[in-house]
Image 1 (tube, helix red, strand yellow):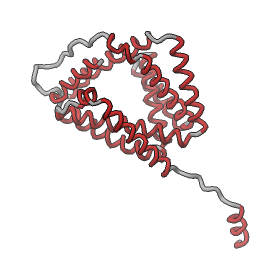
Image 2 (cartoon, helix red, strand yellow; image 1 turned 180 degrees about the vertical axis):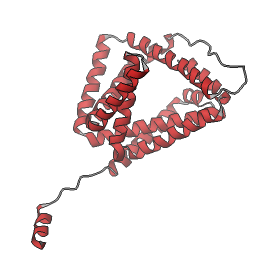
Image 3 (cartoon, one colour; image 1 turned 90 degrees about the horizontal axis):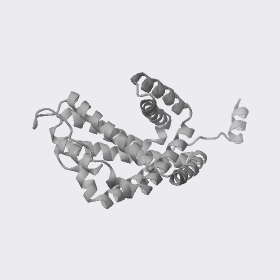
Image 4 (tube, helix red, strand yellow; image 1 turned 90 degrees about the vertical axis):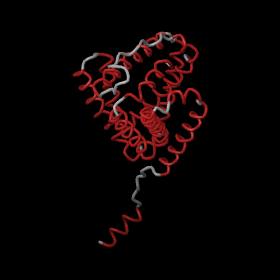
Amino acid sequence: MEEALLKFEALGPLFDRAVLIVPGLILAAAGLVVWLGGLRCSWFLAGAGAAVAGAAAGFLIFGEPVAMMVTSVVFGFAGMGLKRVFVALAAGGLVFGLVIGVFLAGSMGNIEAMGDVQIGNEGEVITASEAVEIVKVYVEYFLGVLREIFDEVSVRRYAIGMGAGAIVAVASFIFNSAAGAVFYSIVGTSMIFCGMGVLLLHKGAGPVSGVFDRGALCVMVFLMMAVFGAAVQWLLRPVKVKKSKVDDEEKSGEE
């Protein structure tokens, strides 16, 4: 997997400027909003996140564009209406993935290496249409890697991951504001990291190799940003103002 990411990094300077700069700026800017203001627009983010999850589910189950659109719309509206449930399920899924990732960290080196990616003439600028085809190749490769990884997971490890995810999901449903602040901060921080990485790819700055070489530093910065974002969102969270009986009595007396 590391080799595949480094190959993509090597292609970065060859992409047309708009191919990387525009998505990178959009991803980083959206990440800032989610990082510090996720709770303020949680209904929209819940709908968008559920729509993405629905599209992914439609692709994995049916593999048809129409099915992806249908599942995306259905999941999106459900996410907006059930944002509390969405945050709980998303937080539980995140913990489940982290637990499985820890279990399989030692077996990542056994993954089959990615083959060479076919591009146009060597040294020429990669256009938007060529970039789409390259991204498709990488998506198919990483989906295959995920299937290979999860095939190696034992039932006991699945049970441990699901148990941890279920505990976090229940806790997130009960303490929804706190869980939402942490979850949206983590998602926003990830989007900022990805957006900045895409921008650095175009400059040939080697963001992927930098992460592998200075992994501990990157993790520390990520955690600091996630904690700060969660604290800011918690302090700025929307609070429902309850009307007191005294206010009601004063209003009735004035009338």
